[in-house]
Length: 349
Ligand SMILES: Nc1ncnc2c1ncn2[C@@H]1O[C@H](COP(=O)(O)OP(=O)(O)O)[C@@H](O)[C@H]1O
Ligand SMILES: [Mg+2]
Image 1 (cartoon, helix red, strand yellow):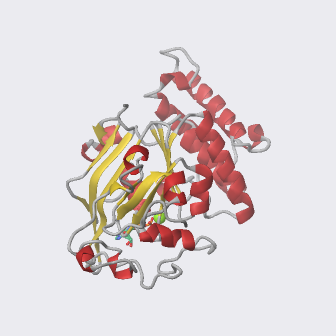
Image 2: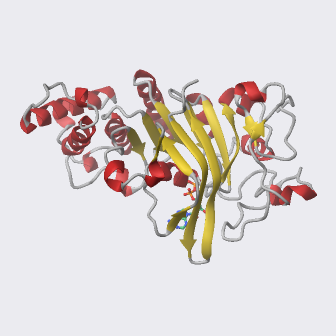
Image 3: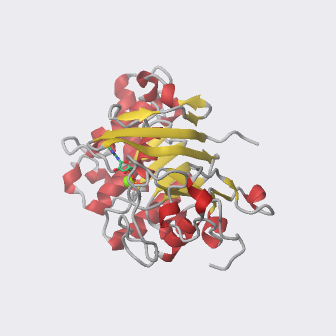
């Protein structure tokens, strides 16, 4: 079996805040194989974005402090990589669509310049990206990068792309800007794409189009993807696998069909029950009292126990480990759950 492209092992992250140090990632474990499309879901504040940002090493430290964990990308631990070696990975082998300004479009520069810069940087590790002979002049490389930028804008179906190439970001609508961001994330043909809520900020009518476009590109470029979203409908439509996060840990994971079809963690079940709601705001889970816990003073053992109808005395004694969801099938499918009293996998939903 191939080693996974991305292998996050026991990732612990503390963030300093006004109230003290919050233990925001509590041993995140995630293995993403080549070509898999993983959805990462969970309520607001459960650590989805910090997981994605950690892979790109974009969490400022301080206030962040990492523990013993590892983030292996193609076998290399990103957490210990010198920044000089990390920089070319971003936008090169690892494409990103984040909502934070560092990975967003810069309002001061033309679309063409921003795409060309990313393409030139990516060509450093993938020279075939630019169809120019080795040793071509800087000018020829730039020209080739510009041609590639135009091709990408056409691929993401910006109407009249040749004319729009030299526009500034503000000249585009929100949906079109998101298409440009997708073009920018993919122009370097990354092996791994991390997309954090790529459609959430868009009008509902545009969301579906952008998601479909993203799916097409992922398929055409054979990319491995981490798609962070609070929307389980998006996961069902676009992902092969899903990791459900709660309060800084992955509580259930596996193939989408198994996890969403036969959820075994009470939290996953609650998320599915909450689907009709448009927004899953903090603490807005139907039928589940309470809110995501304070991570400065988290509850001991299973962090979901205080909200869980199935919790028993032992649940707060120890942190549950991820184990096959069903002795019969879990070991084969990779469906795993971190719960001392999971729902039976075969139970009707
Ligand atoms: N810069 C920061 N400083 C302190 N705490 C942070 C910071 N960024 C995020 N957090 C905290 O870390 C937790 C996880 O945040 P995040 O990964 O953004 O959640 P999600 O993306 O799932 O909504 C939250 O409790 C949040 O308040
Ligand atoms: Mg987030």
